Structure formats: structure tokens, C-alpha cells
Image (cartoon, rainbow, N blue to C red):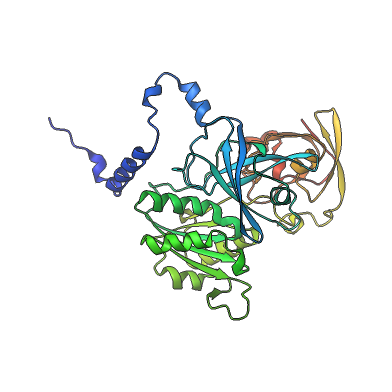
Length: 385
């Protein structure tokens, strides 16, 4: 009896098969490694990467691009849109920050990141002012959930980027255009000033030569005589540039203030939440303005934090516990530093903390008293196990 391949009845199956063929052409074949599962897992997902700074380039007045190579002659693969969490020793404090990889997955020689100077930024200032070619650092392996899924995200994508939030999109755009993948991408990139548009020339060049990629730049604080799009990325502007929005999947990455604004604009366009992908964005600039923050606790109040019954440190209410601990050379495992990955998950023995909306605590965490110190703020003296 002849069997029939019912997979071909699934909408989009043929397109996915074509994409798999392309990816197999460029990817490494691991079938020869059969029987070496643990070694392969460690190769693909090492706990620590040892990296060296191969190249530094000034991209804009506020941003530099860094190319990082492996000191062990191997970089694990990743999906476009993922990030690495880089550990640094700055000002006598060992800390880390996540940076999206801007290079595409088909570039296996280096990871590229773009670092923009943040106002009062501790680590960004270190990268821009002190880091030199040849310097060494450690990193986690690539991780994160902000990437394209061919089964559910469709072929028509709209990227809403703000500032340095362009970096994961650059990786996706490079992969799509380099490999000739069957996706249509429309990038709407918001920047305060024209001179701070990161990767502008490359993106314009790719839009010129690839029909499946187009971009629009929107400047919120334009100089006199500026002739491009100005203002903010509103629902009206999105509708004007994109046209029919119902068949699109929207990706959003940028500063904290952009999330609240753009999510409201997409809501006004009746975009269902399942069609919106957002990247994690770190701790809020002012946690005391978050919904639920107790009005009787000023951000500058200090509390005592006991750690494992061995050491007590002082922590400011409006500063994430993870940073307060790092200042005292207590380093916890961390990756996203945004309350999502749960790598820094820690037992709260006593006391009270505030965790803003968006922290992805599991039900078991809440039941048994675990917190994510990267987005936990002390509201009393506390004890951590």
C-alpha cells in the first residue's frame, strides 16, 4: 500500500523545507559525531567562553563596534537575535552585561556587538573608554528567545528598533540577505539624532540591493532642515509605512520607554499579542515609578542584606540586589539581567523585595520563596541563602 506524506498538506511546509535545505548547506553536519552526546552539548553550549577583542571600530559618536574572537579557536553557533552576557572587571567590580550579537549565524569567525554609551552607564563607559584590541574577557554562550521561528512567525516581518536595539535586527537582516532566505523584512528604526543611527550605511546598502528588505529611519529630535521622517513610531506612521498589518509579525527592541509607547501603538492597530515579539531590556531606570512600588519607601533608603549567613552588605532600595552584591564582590551566575533566564535565581530566607512587572518567576519560585536578584529590590532588611 502506497503511503502518503501528509506533511505536504501543512501550509508553509514546502517553504520550510526549502529553508532547511539552505541552512543545511551552510551548517555543520554533526551526524559524524554520533555517540558523543555530552561532548557535543558542551561544544554547542559551553558554560564559559574565553574571548579576545580582535577589532574596535567607531560607528557613531556614541557607539563602538567590537569584534570578539575565541581564545579557544571555536565559537558555538547561535540563532540571529540571541545575545551573550559578557563579564568584565571595571573599577574593581566584577559584573556582566548582555549584548545582542549583530553578526549573522553564518559568520563563524567572530561575534560582533555594538555598545552605545548609556547615561551614567558603568559598563558601557568601560567598553568605550578602556577596552582595547587584544584584551581578554569571559562570556556565556549565546542564549535568548528573541529569534525567528519559521513555524509561527510567517514570512512578513516588521522590525521596530530604537537606538542600540538595532543590533539583534542587524543579525537577522544580515542572515536573511546573505543567505537569500524567503522572508520579507521592513525595518522602522527610531533614533533621537541622525548622527546616532547605528549601521546606517550598511543597512541602506542592503535595502538597495535586496528587494525583500526595506527600511525607514525616524528621527525624534531632528536638526533644522532635516528632510526625513520625524517624530515617534506611532500607529499612524506604522500603518502609513507598512500598509496592511494583519499578516505581519512585529519584533520590538529598544530602550525601556520605547516598549511602553510602541506596544500601545500596536495595540491600537489591533495586533494580537501573539504576533508581537519583544526583547528583554534590563532593569527600569527608575523602579520607584513602576506600578506597585510602595510609596513609603524612598529609592535612596538603604537596607542590610545578609548572604548565606556569612556576610552582610548594604543595599539601596532602588538598585537591583545583583548589582549591590557585585559591589561587595559577591558574584552570582547571571545571563539576561532582565528577570527572564532565572540563572541568578536565589532563595529569599527572610524580608521583603519588590519585583517589577515582567519578571518571569515560576509558580514554584513564588511558592518556595525564590527571587531573581537581577530585578529584585529590597524593601526591608533581608537574608539570602
